[in-house]
Length: 374
Image (tube, rainbow, N blue to C red; front, side):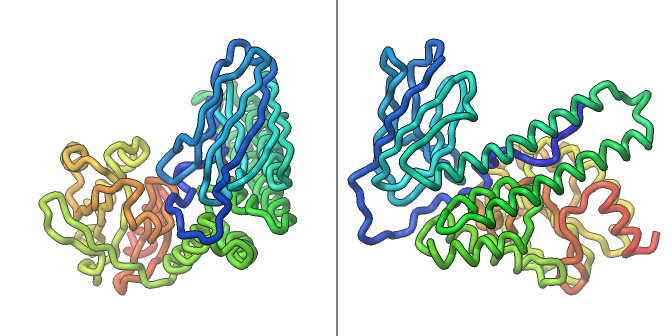
């Protein structure tokens, strides 16, 4: 039996703020990274790429010499999280506009890389090693329960598995928060927030935001975190849900506010999202059971291909209201509702207030039973 790990390593592309703000008095002389890869075994090239919300952006590439040495250069508008990439692995660095860094990597022990010239990169490495220690413990739990299958996976064993992962996840979060909270005058705490997905801890984010937004208010990361926190507050349970106005598959305007008076499940999904498609039959069953009682579903798609979106609606027989701006993760709705992964849901009451978030399957059904009484 395969046990799904309860937390993530480096969830880059969904969490980094891509836009660059205007800067003044920036040193544009550029950065230099002098590096060496030992035990490379034929590695010929290395690159540095910026981590952004829409993926990786190439900054520079370099060819290794006979000794495994390389030099990467480039210009960045501000201090930026980047990925050093080569055939056998990756290393994350925080690169300043005019940084001079020295990097040494053993291709057989990548996590033990050494970087000189930046205190923040030492902190970033410590954060990575801390997270990695918990990932190894998670692997050990997987191995411990690997022999179980449908025949011997008793309720007692299931409870033991759940408790083991819950305990590890709580310890993981506590350790990451403690380490991030110990850092001063550093952007690394921002990066620490990406290790706590998919469940944001608003109190932790607020503590990090209070520091970063004061000290690095021109940084795109500090700005993004601040905006993210504001979005979380606006979509907190009990808050009035922000309105959603989109075009349906036929180009007609549809809105969440147009469903006031009903209990509404706002289902953020996409045709390309496997877990979303797996949830659709469950949502169809609940919709058919409760629609006569005032239950409605508003499907908000993060698709970019209109035909794929419409085909998925028809194939999965989703007979409720749908809307999309066909901008995928670039949709303003992603930031508006602080969506970091799909499927994602919010349940809205008849007055438009948020009752619950992230309900799926049995949890959603239990909530509807609580609301409708059967």
